[in-house]
Length: 116
Image 1: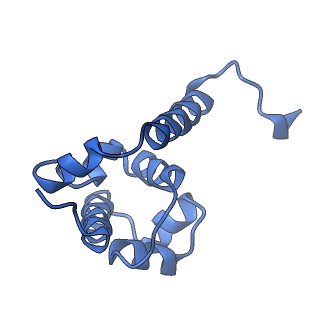
Image 2: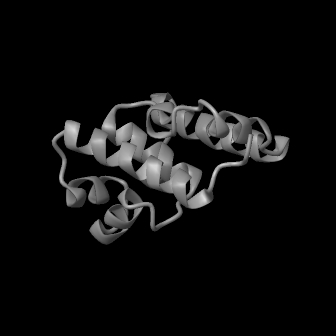
């Protein structure tokens, strides 16, 4: 199977973000404010025109109360094959970033450096 087109990948992710944003009854501006982006960035992400960091995807998923998997293409066919071929270092970096983000959001005993 052929590797997925990068532009199509971002287009599909953008469609999923828009679907879940509308389902959550949030405007683009509302979502943008909650993930520290501009409304224009959300528009461009939803249209597949703007790339973004893994942490941004995690933040969007958290605000929309969905899993990151819900925002990614289905993983069937060419996308599943492409995901299998990602370098180990990339998978590990994404996994650690997500785990650190989740841990910092869910650990009530962890002190916030900004509140010391």
